[in-house]
Image (cartoon, rainbow over all chains, first blue to last red; front, side, top):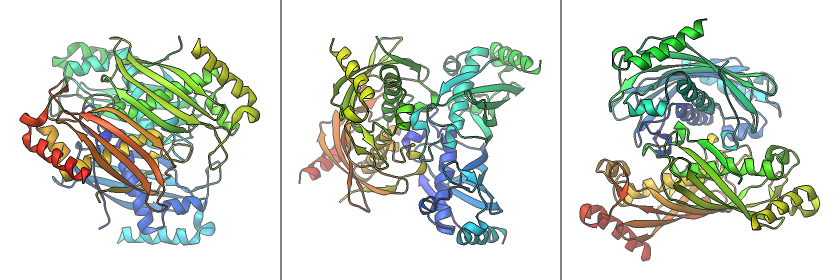
Length: 141
Length: 141
Length: 141
Length: 141
């Protein structure tokens, strides 16, 4: 199963001694960027083609703390994909204890141009459309 | 009406030229800390009493971009308060354009001890309880 | 005397319970942006004219810790200005204790174009040049 | 030769489209933590023993920009070690172009206690002392 793994960095903690809750959106972004690279194409190359994928919404539950040096995994699924929008769900586990630390979801849209206006990628970026669609089908299996 | 105002800082933007979406959780935290100070007591002093308020969950919709130097306001309401948990809702507006940039909510619990275990504050911190309850009543008016 | 003041935010601390040392470069950037606005012009407007001021180098001594909710002041001086480069020195004090927490300096260059190539602003942006030169003279008084 | 490698993350960039200069102190911290783990002991375990290594000073030159998705390496040397203080030098290269992007140094002290007071580790932590001393000798070869 696809997953993203790394350890918590020192500056990701706050004075509670745990990962600041805002940073979970960064951890899942790290995972999402790698997921897109592995299932579709390098996100950086996608941006060079003029296609970006901003966040529309994000929500999550902080289930257990992560601390400095804890290794965590992010597992994720593409649960919706229309060519205009896409939605991912995420789980972050502490890989040593197995504990579920975070579960959340994020919705994104495909955008182009200097004003980041929404676009449908089906005709304009057919190969990217197909790759996302294939990844979405895999999720359903 | 209570609000928190400041301008977007340079390092809060990413290479899209807009505030990174993870930072909205920081903007509303800045507001929440000031709100707690103004309605209950200084959050730092609360922590010194051994009471902290970690996040249980957070969700939000990114409605419009904020850019460097944009002034924004955070308005917020305490919509639930039980002495064990509390829930806030937030709106972030661009103060120059009036545009709604973010709307979200966060749920928190009262915690104590080195392990941040949940507590009910009604008996242990009656004055803090009363101040939150009074703020909650104001919301309902 | 010109100064920048605000309080330390929660997410600026790390698990040592103090401001993470990398954030001092952010605190002095916040101050520098305000200083430039007050002495020259709004930095955002300057960027819209096509002029940016990237950092060439930065150094500093961490003299005392700043903690959450501590109010600090940044005082600073423009100590060199050539129209091509400029150098600032900074001091950060805890405003309650008066303690010196940080002293440092940063060197910057004027840049233009998509590749951020160095330029001399004397002819191209004479009003900006004059404003920086006047601010530099004030420093010497 | 020892080195730390990873790619630039999206949220490490700012609206200039490059890594925000404050983040270089985070990149070298990431490297330093791994270096200490590989040459001495896991930094997290060291903190559990009551020994921490705060920064006294840091300086660096920003030589070339790093952008999102660029892979970089951090190479570093322990150039001074007294049992009370230690000093590292760093170089960050873009691994694809070979370009030097950052060179800098940081000075740290050994600290203990809730007030992070300076200590000499030679008698109190002889094994840690020996490991740092051995790493320092290697540097000189």
